[in-house]
Image 1 (cartoon, rainbow, N blue to C red):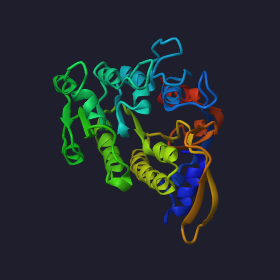
Image 2 (cartoon, rainbow, N blue to C red; image 1 turned 45 degrees about the vertical axis):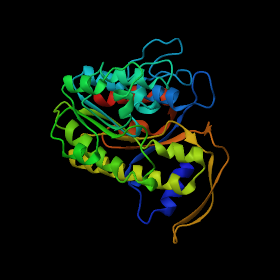
Image 3 (cartoon, one colour; image 1 turned 90 degrees about the vertical axis):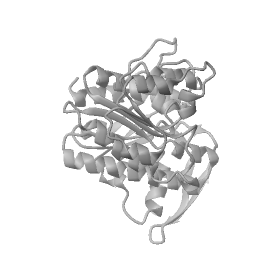
Image 4 (spheres, rainbow, N blue to C red; image 1 turned 135 degrees about the vertical axis):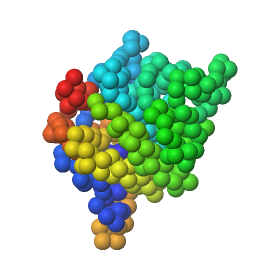
Length: 318
């Protein structure tokens, strides 16, 4: 989600975006340790752990050594933790906050890493990586033994009264919102906050609108804007909670820009925009950062993606 994607979505929307409620903005550099153009595994790892790694690596340094993530640190400090994603929960970005693997495509091994943590809630696709595995392990049974309520529809997820919830919304990857995903991301965001905010010590929650990236790869302008609007709705849920709570920091950013999106023309009155794409891959552009709440001022300026961990730790007082 680069700046052009954000501005295009602002143009098309018939109301101000929730992003515009954020009080501080910044820019972050996304390159990985071995490539000017990062992938989501390396950039997600940098955001989560404060360390750059090679493209394709999840939660490990270039030599394969485990890097502790902000989610794992929060767990150690007694906070509640969660992940919500429109992709499979085993996909690169959510995986970077909870798993440790030399390859982002080792989905079954990444799923096993979920059982090595005490994460309180995770909602997204990827059921088959837990249930239909080449090693014949049934991680669904393992999750239940660990005290999780496991649900496989968004309605049952929303109706759960458990404080440990594994919510699967698709066997693999969820469809685009335009293809029938519905409002899974905003509603799952609200459910995760409802569960995690019960902890008086606080919580850490990572929410990803994963398919903004996929629409960029596909060079699909309509899908790109639809997915960004969907993410913005989820952000609105988080910002509404933060405004009521007064003690919650919300930070919005991207792993990288995808598609080389350019705004060629548009009309703010008719909410029309003309986009062009320069690639079906990622680009090396800095990506925007938006922040709201206590500590938001730390996210102004220009900095590296490895700086997020230190800023998070300072805000938590760890």
